[in-house]
Image (cartoon, rainbow, N blue to C red; front, side, top):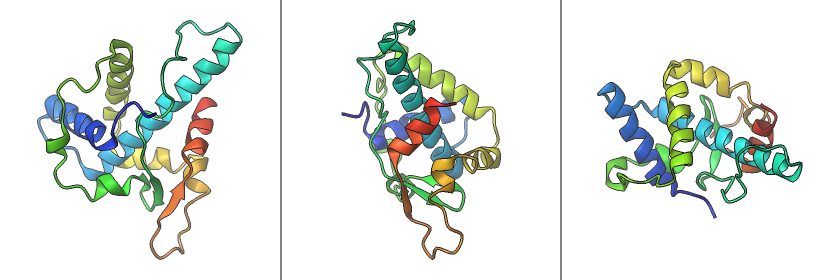
Length: 161
């Protein structure tokens, strides 16, 4: 079971960005932030579970779900996109102040948000275009650019990063 509902998590990201920069997050930045949060968290937890089996993991992550949230990622021109969020016009209504109640998860996500926010929107697009999960599912000739990216492919790729 995923840790969060995608709309609530997107609202959290949007609010954190506003709190830090006093402006609304761009649609491109929001999409890339959601993608990288999902990918890095999933890779981190899965890698931790693998290492746990080898008794080399310092932090026990076995209690955490690899899926930060459950959403359908599609391979769009500017990288992975969650259409459900792209078409949502009122994320504020989903915001919950204490969405992340686990201190370890909150620290991990907030540090990740710091790193992501230090990079420009289109640099995030460039980085996402290097991911095999996007490359394997994007076709410039597609009319709608709506091929789904397998979430397992994303996580497996980020186990290696």
